[in-house]
Image: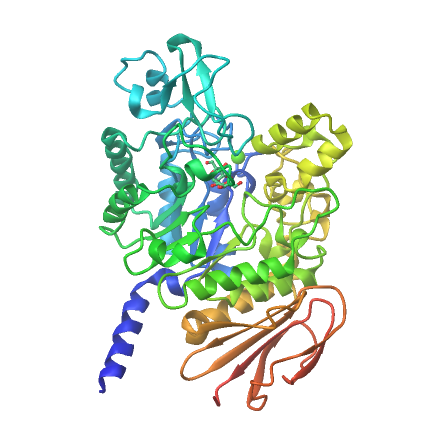
Length: 557
Ligand code: ISL
Ligand code: CA
């Protein structure tokens, strides 16, 4: 066997050992997935009930958002005990049963690792704030201050200062998010040691990996750092962070697990450093492609921005590193509403774009059945801490309450947190009791049970795409190339290996468009594998209408 063939075989074998490269993930926001004990809140035993559903969809692993003890200021991202399960979700025994049953179905489970901050009710912080000389004082960031004079003018992601003053000790503590989420002091080796022990505890329990929360914020600039253009610069991917990421990587590498870091502020130019052969994580979630839409009147995401940003990340990670692919999650509105018109055609078009890109796709709960944004009409219907704070700050600035609500709702995280719509029955089949957040009234027509009555349901389209992807080497490892980069609504790309080429052609709008594909393509030998409309041969001139999607393969290249 020639050297090249040996290298290719070795590389393919190496890649085959990275199970997560051939996998499709499913994100569960446990509070809103399935309630099994009639308290209106999703829980672990509810997830157990739905494991067969996830197996039927064809996903390989589940990422569960935080289920640890928490006062729920940020719905579990404010942890008060890393090794206890929040009573809303069940017990540690319930979790271990869930893990066992998932593994029996060959489904893996990755957990959410929130280590940039704890809850202000965590015992470490309750001790830390007691006195200047408390042994836990430097588990967090405390700086001399007065009520009027805070250490600097940095702003929190959730609005307001990143500093909260404590009268008791005449100092203020630092928090990138809510004041109830004090940032851990990663410079303190005792903090790192406690965190690393906790990580090992969970990995030794047999979980299959972690999604690491807000990890690009754990290093801060010196407090005197002056902000110039980017207000988040003082705590976004700051030099020196690599020391801590290398220590985390050393622990992760002791286990055969998957890690995906939420790495806000890491530019695509650094993607290979964060995820490549010597990367800190197997992959990262970047936040560049899912831009926040907030202004009134701009309720729609930009398809050109989406194409341009995804193309940058596909290109930057073409030869080293790996992408985590997503269009929505628990922090964004629903992609079918941001980029589509809430129709099942739009859902299938977006699914076709997402599932055939290079990287590991993550499907957010409800995306596979076409769940949409919620028509919130009053602030009382909303729950997310940052949305409520944003609304109140708009009112303080004099914005009319109607406009303030419209702006706050535009990008509220609550859109993706409404209870999962299982069937056309009371509360969408999520619970027998009034849920913690309102169920979208469109559950009567948009729900998982539709998969058993509709031939071409959205669920079935996801199932088909997942199956097609997992059985096709070119759709996992093939090189990505964007075609028609400047077209405002057509998303077209190829995936190519040395033996075959695939072409994905999707109209991301409800209108008829005539499109001219590049004359560099040879239009013979293309076979249509999948379409959401009528079968059409691939030609240089194509007429595409409402959210039409086509997938072609060419084995004759
Ligand atoms: O907030 C951001 C941009 O506006 C990001 O830079 C930030 O890193 C991201 O939102 C962090 O999100 C994660 O941590 C938060 C939690 O509220 C989110 O739900 C979680 O996804 C604090 O733990
Ligand atoms: Ca429950």
